[in-house]
Length: 367
Image (tube, rainbow, N blue to C red; front, side, top):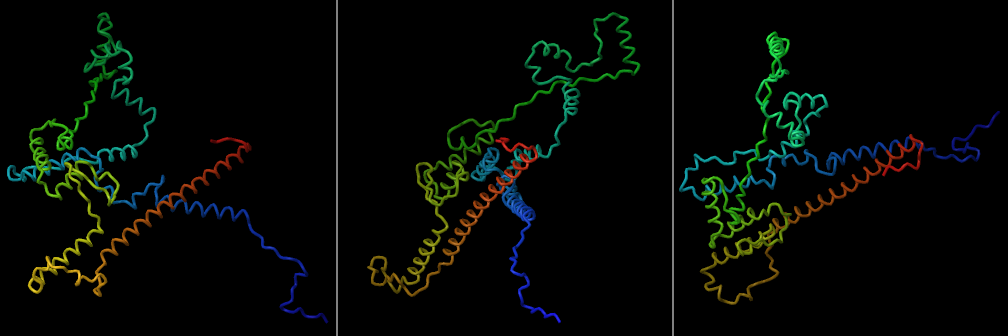
């Protein structure tokens, strides 16, 4: 009778068991994970590290920052407001142009189908009568030969031939064997209308404005902004627009100047000082009868630095939290860009190794 084996006996007879790893599957899994992470970063940052249109969908609703046409229309509208008593605003129209022509043209060029050689040859023959732009500048002889034919019929026969040849040619034309085609006159590209520099006119650097109506409106803005008694808000607006401060990076510590007047920008944190002044004024007004002449008396015995009154710092904490959140988002974006670059570098290395393996030349230099 054989002895039964114990359930917890070691049946390996002293042999060590090792954990087997499928290296091929592990390499494939690492490649899949790397590709998945690369796709996520591309969707988040864009193909070249630029935020995608989904994350910044509202950007397309605004005009490009540096747009002379929009600046001109803005100044004209502002000038009309300055002269609202002299003109009828109901009959005036502003902001009628397309300020996104450049961006729309770039998007249209991207979506445009690529032109083949056959399409290009057909375009040259049909639209340009077989003449290239370079040929007109290269040879003056061909240009002189081409000019008399503008707007004439191309028959393929010369008028200096004999009568029989001309009769035969006319007979062929009238018989319908050949089709007479009108050569379109050569198109001349009209120069684009230059946009007057309205900003330079308002700053006093230029005095050339083509339209008298526009010049009259812009003069109203220039006279108003050059007024020495201009308010602080109007000075800030003039400096912000004329000197294009909106193109600068956001910096709460920048001091701006216009007409030799230094304008301090108040950041959001200065709202606390404004609230304190409001509370102080309210207190002085409410107790003006109980404490007469308190502005002239020494108040330091009643000023308690560490009062039991709880200060309302909710706005301050909110601004601080917003600032910290923006800083963290900027740091996260920087880390994501670095990770995207590293993954792209690894992907390129893997492709180079595959090319070397297929070609059999391990010393190939791909730059």
